[in-house]
Every structure is written in C-alpha cells, then in structure tokens.
Length: 296
Image (cartoon, rainbow, N blue to C red; front, side):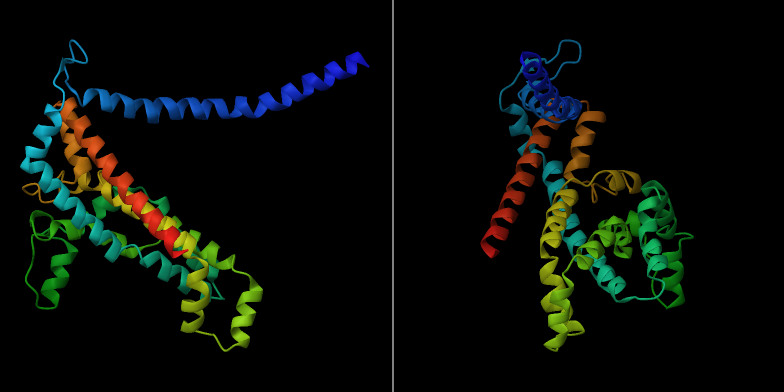
C-alpha cells in the first residue's frame, strides 16, 4: 500500500512537471529576448553609451530632451502617421472583401484560395524588387501606363509627395494569410443562423452586412489592432524601398531608431526613441481595447 502511494505521488509530480518542462524554453527565451531587451533599453536611455566602457556616462533625461528637440524625429512621426492612415485606407479592408468574395464561390474555390495565399509564400524582398521596377521612372510599368493613357510620368519613389503612397500601394493586392483567416471565420458561422436569415429574406448584401460581418467582428477588431501596431512599427519594407529617402520623406519612427543604433551608434538616443514608440503603441492599443469593450 505504501509503495502504491509513493508511485501515485511520483506520478502526480511527474505529470505536473512535464508541462512545465515543455513551457520552460519558451518562457526563458521570451524573458531574455523580449523583456530583458526592454529593461536594457530603459537603462540605456539614461546613458551616453560608451562601447569601450558600457553603459557609459549617466546623463539622466538628456537623451529624451535631445530627442524631442530633434526635427528629424518629429518628421519621422509625421511620416509614420501618414503610413498608418494609408495602410488603413488602402490595405486593411481588401482581405475582408476578398474573403467575402471567396465565400460566394462554389466551383474552383480551392484554386482561387490557393491564388490568394500565394503572396504569403513569396518572400517580401522579391515583391519589393518587383515593385521597385514598376515604380522606376525611366523604364517602369507605372510610367508606361501613365503615358499610354496620356498622363505625365512621375518620379514615384524619388518624389517626396508620392513615395509614401508607393510604399503602401502594393498591399492593395491583398491576399495572404489574412484572407484565409477571414474565410475560416465566415465558415465558422452557424448554418442555423444562415438558414434563419434566408427564411427571413436576408440574402445578398443584406446577409453580408447583417449576418456575416457582425459574426466576424471579433477577428476584424483583432486584425485592426495588429494593423495599427504593424503600421507604427514599419521598417523592413521602407528600408528596402528607400531607406527613408528622399530627404527623409519616408523615414518612419522605427527606421529613425534603426539609424540611431546602426548609423549614428547613438544607443542612448535610439533607446529613448524606442521607449517613446512603445509607449505610444501601448496607449493606442489600450484605447482600442477600451473602445471595443464599450461597444460590446
């Protein structure tokens, strides 16, 4: 009997430890790669970093004062706000429309779905190289089409007025994982709800607005939050398109931070800028969540 009790106790301990052991690597890497870097950024933001004698000279709030006096920093914020607006206006709704369209297709649905998912498979760098060719002012397809319809050729990526639009516009093609997520949510709507709507005469666009969209609202909201966060953190595609040019017309806050670290080697200023960006994103996300709770 005593041996059985010991075996049961050992089994309970073993059963409790296995999930912990599986979770431990993920938790450890999250703490090191996420939270440790945040703590380190907070520390560096109060120092004039010296790579030979880290962390260097303590300067208190001087990095934040220098940051808020920097006109380039505020220019990067203006660019980031424009990028956010363009992303929401041009690209956010497209996957929803595509998913609604796919749900209506009966024949060749698998083929069309595969076509929509292909953009997620193609590396983003290849897509950017292709669009840089399209926007090329000398031999690009964009100016060719403009000339064909009697328009005036543009400098596109070299034009301060057009560059932000040119960086965001490729997203208007939609596709990718977002479409499949919306499509899966639409398929998850109860058939009883759909049948009741049809019996009540709610078909076509009425069904879309009163049945489909309200039932996938939770996913639309989640993707909206992620779209805002992603737009505020835009870096890779801007770096590959223009590296912030021309004349800082496309430099986002994230790219400004990258240049502080990798170009100017000013780790204190870069850390201060990254903390302010994190705070703004956190506040925006908080207000979005609070607004959603009130609507619910």
